[in-house]
Every structure is written in structure tokens, then in C-alpha cells.
Length: 288
Length: 288
Image (cartoon, chains in turn red, yellow):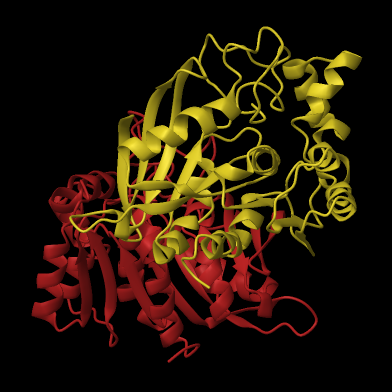
């Protein structure tokens, strides 16, 4: 991991690293916020929240716009902000140049269809590669990780948290794409990355929150999910009602709150951030 | 004032307005954050903090990166974030295309030299035009205004606060250009906007914090100024030591704090924001 920049921030440090990922077959950037107690001579190994960003975002959006560092500093919690897709001139992207698939839109899964399999492996990058790098090079306790994200990143948080429950103490999401198999964004991305034949439907189910719940995946603790009622993507793309029904019918504890007046922007993310950080900090036993 | 966008944010609203300014002879954008108590049927008229941004910024930098809305919501304080210069194809800018003068770098003064006098009137825009628009169209009490800013905007806050003490209850600055007549950024801008002849020096003194203090301008309350010791512009451009001496020698109360490890970025601004909002809220009697 090569350090690109570091800024003192709320007595901690906001860093940006660059690394050559084997899983992604590309260079990728990742933001790391270390709280003050993870720095200096008396530094401690601290738990971390992994934050997955949404469509069109990079590793920088949450770093610059979520305001999460203040509360993370107070709680003694690191923040890890990966990029949202593989990057580079040799990484294929949306054939029509649209923003809802390809670069900036990797959907946190491992692709099964060409030409995407070489690079589009964000799930394996996160779980099999990034976490061990973090624990080897930084004072981060990968046995105490929370996972959250926004929009496509909320989808990633819910899916990874249901698929690999042992990797994370707690899961939350802001405005997640909760049922990608049933919405235009998700159907487009899954068709490219997983295939669009009837046989590919089985693969789709392995990367879809609603389908995972229907198929018996479960977390023992409650999922925290916040959605804005003025979100222009609410009904067509996010489908929180599908999540509510799937959780209720399959015994998954869910704390789904619909917030009047809020939209899909980082102004909503920032407004919800303390609540999410505290949700994870409770699971990490940083607060009661 | 034409509303360009509005987002629910910490139970208040982050708005962006566009207006045709007579003083600037141009269109200009301004951000307005209204806290929850300034909205709805029972809305109150609230005090406001005017935040002046630094070189290269627009009205959006502080809105997206300072994280100020959370505390402003809690305090019941509006935030006003003007642009940093006049804008438009007909507005002259740096003849060599540099970023330290012209568009994005208006220095919050009224130009005296051609071709700048038609548009470069940020001081008069703020004091004679914007505040009356805000009070006419929004639930903002312009008799209870605080003024703060970052870098060039810190210079603007200190200068406007000393020149027109009756307009503002309180003044603060993060990493201000404290002695523009004595630093490369300021000398360049003042040469363009005010002239570079020996006779122009008298005009320079009217827009320079150190010179204003030397010439008898004073505020009764203390100025709050935070500067980072890892700021790459510290000694050459910001010159906080000149400010400390001028304040001490001329009886201006000053709370100047130098912060170990912090640089010139918005990570420092965000880290200082609560402290500045509380400084102004005390002057407005929102808190004790």
C-alpha cells in the first residue's frame, strides 16, 4: 500500500492509499481514516467501519462529503472507503458510456461473464485481499469490522453482510438498492456481470439482498437501513418495501426507517452518519 | 433570488440560489442553509453565519465539505455561503490563467483599477446587496450576523469585520491570509485590483487586516483565528505572526491558536467548524 496523501483531521489522520490489487488486476485507491487513538507511540489497534459508496463515486466521496470523521474520532473507530469499481484504461466499462455500469459501478460482486471476470471482482477484493492488507499494514482489527454504504454501496453492504456474516459484526445501509434483480440499475449490471440467460438467474440470487433472505441467509442482529421518502429513485430502483417484506417473511431483524423529505444525496448520508456510526460502535462495544 | 436546488439536511434545508447582482454586474450563486426552526408554519427568524471561502472555491465548497450543517441545525443558525468572485465569460480574470487571482479569487474588496471595477465588488455585493436580499426573501435576521471564512475568505472576514464592525456581531477565521500586502498572493491581487503605484498603497491599507489594525480599526470582542502548523502556506502567505503582533500592539483582543499537524485543507476547516459555530452562537446569545 503506497501512501498518496495524509491530512490531520479531527485529531486523527485522513489518508489515501494506492495499491495494486491481485483480485482486481488493477491499481485501486482506498481511503483510511485513523482516529487519534490509533496514532502515536501509545497507539491501539482499533475496529473499523468499511463504507461502500454508490454509483459514480470513487474512494473520495464519503471522505469529503459524509462528515464521518468527527464521530469516528470521538468513537475511536477507523473508516475504510474503497473505490466503487476496478479502474484503468484496460478495464472494460459500459459499452454506451453510461454512468450506471462499469467504471464507478462495480456492484461489489465477482463477475462470471466475459469480458468482466478479469477485473470485476470487488467482493473478493474486499473480503480476501483488502482486509488482510489493512490488518498487516495498519493498526486495524479485522475481527471487529462493520460494513455500511450508500445506494449501490448499501446493496454491497447488505449482500456481503448476508453472504459472509462471519466477516462483519454489524451491517447498515443508507438508501440501498435493496432488490437489484427487480430494478433497472441492478438488472443491467447483473446482465453484464453475471449473464442474462435463464440459467444465470441462480447467480443473480447470490448477489441480491431480497433473494439471499428468501434463500435462507440471515444475520442474528438487526440490519439498520435508512431511506429518504423524497428520493427520486425510491420506488423504481431502491425498493425498500421489497426488503421490508423479505425480512419480515424470513425472520431477519430489520430496523428500516423512512425519512420524510430526504433525497438521495450526500446531504442525506451526512444527516444519517452519526446514527450509523453509533450502530456499528455498539456492536463493537465501543459504546453501550 | 432564484432557487436552483434544495436538499433536506439535518432536518433543515440546504438551498442554492442564483441571483443577478447589481454590484457584481453578473449572475452569482449563493448557498443558504436554513436550520429546522427557520422552516415550516412555526418558523422563526434566525441569525446567520456568513462563510467566505478561499482561492479557487465556489459557493459549494463549504456546503459540501465543511460539515457545518449538523452543528448549525443544532444551534438554530443559518449558513450563508457566497461565491468567491464574480463569474461569467464577460468577467475578466487572471491574464495568465493562474488560479490565485480573478475567477474564484475576488479578495472580497471593491476594485479601483480597470478592467476590474465593473465586476470585482465583492465587498459591496455582500454588505450592500446580499444581506438585504437575504432579509427580504428569507427568515434571516441580518442584525444578528457572524462572519467567518477560510484562507482568502478568512482575510475577507477579518477585513470586512474591521471595516464595518456594526454589520457583524462576531468575526472568526480559519487559516486567513492575515497580511495580504506582505505576501505574494495578496500583492498580486492588490496590484491588479487596487493598483501598483506608490499612491495605491493607501488603498491597499484599507483592505489589509494588519494595516487596518495599525490604522486604528478595532472590534471590541475577540477575533477567533485558527491556523494549522503544517500548512504549506503558513509563513509566506498567511503570516499569522504579523496578525498576532498587530493585534497586541494595537489593543485588538485576539484568540489565535496554532494547531499542530493540521494543513490548509478542508479537513482542517471541518475539524475547526464546531468551534467557530459556537463562537458565533455565543455572540448571538444562542448559547452561553
